[in-house]
Picture 1 (spheres, rainbow, N blue to C red):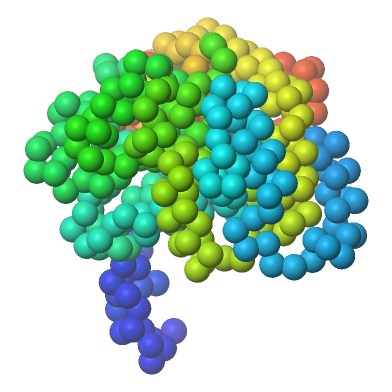
Picture 2 (cartoon, rainbow, N blue to C red):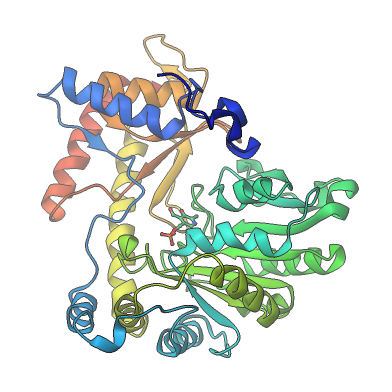
Length: 410
Ligand SMILES: Cc1ncc(COP(=O)(O)O)c(C=O)c1O
């Protein structure tokens, strides 16, 4: 295909004149291709898919019933702008009931069309060219991508097993701290499964104050916390003075496709977010906001979601442990992040988690997501499709059978 006349017009941030010509294949695309190949070459072998990062169930029936009623009401038809009061009030009730966090729904809460766009928009409120966003890796890269779009830089904070998957804030060079404006953290952490502690959050607050940095805590997985009650950053004294927490209905309420989330915390940051958002979209469909408000008011939904993924994670930990992996129950999320095998007992070696993951999918139809950013790890998601517990057990038995034949070596 010859270049269109506008080929030279693409912005540098997406590759400039070379946009669309790259041959690099991104991780998730590689996984998709390997999955297709495994299915085509081995139709007889069931694909065991631990690669999916999405809930496997639809939203609760009660939530769908609210949606079904609201969708017909003429008053819900228009632009929702920065959101309806009923949703903000439900979000404030939820924050108080779940985490003991008191918020002014009119000023300290604003909806977003899922948490992804909120993470994409927040850098617009702070980042000028040359400013720095501190981001943990491995992790959800969206705020970093947008930081770079605005001419900012990303300083990566590796989440290492030896640091208990917390970032080393003390190790950040003074010159970076001076230019840093945002610290983006995510607990319960995806993919490591680490949950935050009050002490860690207190350290983050002190660090933010000392260095005059704004904290964005991504709480997308917060309701999937397995040890203690879920912990909100905003429940730690001083947090509201330094930042915001971004919440999502996707994971904890099985509402991935509905696209609802909210930003809450410091009034001025919420206001800045709302201003950027107002210039970017016109709000989520009001019927969805009302259904999401009903979900937030229903305490039993996240309990059911949590117990389901806890049960599945426990089964997976048992199977992987019996197959030679050194793993344990994560504190949160629906992911198990575990050291990748260095090879096989028979002699094959893997230099990276990506190589191990490609082997598992192409040779054994077991799909995982590799992470090589801070050590070689594989992420197993328990959001696979299995209609009941018997189906879960059958899938686990098949996983164990295949892994024991493979004989991973660590
Ligand atoms: C850590 C993290 N943050 C944010 C998101 C975005 O979620 P959503 O836009 O569905 O609220 C995800 C989704 O995978 C995630 O894993």
